Length: 334
Length: 175
Image (spheres, rainbow over the protein chains, first blue to last red):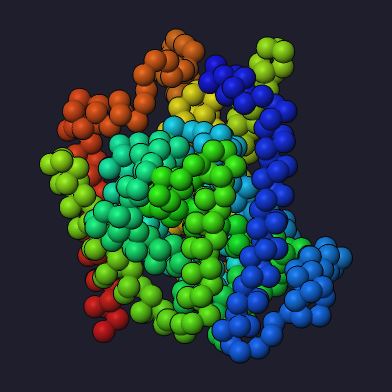
């Protein structure tokens, strides 16, 4: 009990409330910006224009889409499990906001600083799978079921290389505290510079791409086979929340990559990283990584399911295990 | 101001207790297997909350990560593979079984109360005081309690080997 009281006293109630409102705003803003960027870049890659009608270059399109989703009815299928069907989008969205609270945007700009921040983020991210499962099962629809089952198989397989690759960074810094991990990379020595951690970085990017269910690993929502996968039956803002949570998860994936491997809020060339400049560097790294993910998504075709499983179990997990051993050896030697 | 914080902490405690109890009730009572597993997940979440209340953040996160993120998901996956439509979800407690069940649990409850609960001296749950950092946990697991730690991994190994044998046996019978 004393710990809870201490926690509330350190971060006063008003600050918590403001932080949560701001973070929810950031999650939605991120979805709007990323949705627009994704549509524009996809269009550019496929030699077409993308949204052009509303606003200059169609920049208001996503906001109007949001308004449209808010105005639409949330249809619950007759044979669906009503309570779980409505619960699933919220369960998908809430952990995203909770994870955003633990991300260090800069040295002074964060929701909460935990000494086990990394474990907290991974634990909350595991609830996302649960939401997808509940959505798929409660829809009472074979496409949703198959989407959910694929998603779980994929998430179980790819969580292991993610954890192993992050663990090599934790071994190097001997801390789960995200702020300490960022501070350990001040100056030019970002962790992606070291060869063994660079391997971990690449493994993390591939596995993270699969963990966020994005192409070329978007089998849970493969349009050509499963209509829309686990969110086939969702309409209106139920679907909207899934979309927002998906972009939120993408942001989290990219920001963990930039915190653990690319120096977080440290500027390049040892440039100044005050509260605002730090946030600028952090966000620019995150957005570069997210743009790379979009680029990959619209460039490569979807893999087959057996290829997906083989990639995780036969290549990524052994590689990351060996890499972890090498890292442990190096940390002990140096 | 301090009273407000006290109240929030107490309210959280009661919420966690309610989550645990209602989750456990749902896990036992639900007629659809999926609801049982979700009840179990809620129950485990409540237990994680109790760890948080007692001041062990690390244990809270591990509880969520392992029990909700791994064990419950694997259970749900098993249910989905052996999917039963909603219509065939039936009451598995017959009236005769119910009488027997009540009798058995009554005897067990009386025995438990006279032997264990009645004689226990109830002391306040240990709040984490002092140094219970991850380093401390790691050192005590790998130095003081190393044997127990390694034996648990042997149990896991046996479980894995056993499941492989079971799966292989099933496949050979089909051929």
